[in-house]
Image (cartoon, rainbow, N blue to C red; front, side, top):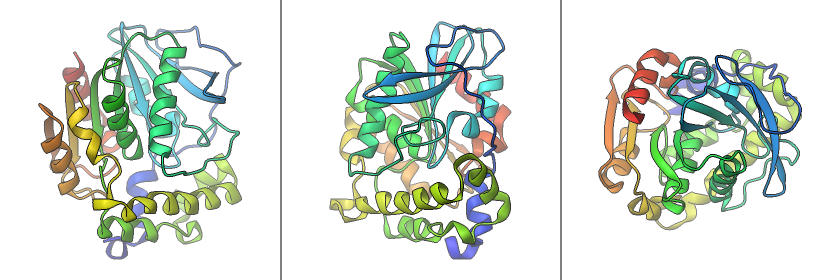
Length: 289
């Protein structure tokens, strides 16, 4: 599939929204609400995690980005336009991504579990008593694990572009993006600006190796064994034209998360929350309320 699309086609779908120039405010919980988006850093599990925060609603929502992504780069339409009276929205940078550096990003076999714990502990550090999760791609995997492992803390969950296991078909796509020098300039340049070329290239290679570890697990397992433990209301969104995550991944999650809903977007691709932001945001708001 990756070869048929070419590097430009594959990467543009998942990374076209990336933009440089994130402003970091002084460390500590952000105090401003309303329509503004504030930034801060807090120490969680021995690392300094960067986050953005907006809104003043009672319902806390955490946005979880995808591979190499950060809150601002992956979720601009959600930070700007999700209902700020209903929700307090937090977008985070997982350790080693965006502005949650140092440390450099690494990929031990439990990196998704580590991200899930970091995400939950971040929200607890920010004094939220319960949260809902919006997870895209790798962030969707993290969200599924968090919901399974911390069920009392997760209110509701929306995931899209996620997979609970790795297949040979997935591995072809991952190997196709290993060499960032073959990416189109349009998709490569923002990440070069954000990270510097060396860190960007090295981290992409490490990610491909990291996600490839799961292919050698029984049934390619990432978190399929945890799906029956998810207790919160769950919405799975899938773009019917997503070339990066085949439909069977969404069907598997839907089948194994009890009581979950599956919503298909006929024209949606991997970054459906960016390409169809208004439709996606309304869908999410209706589900979360």
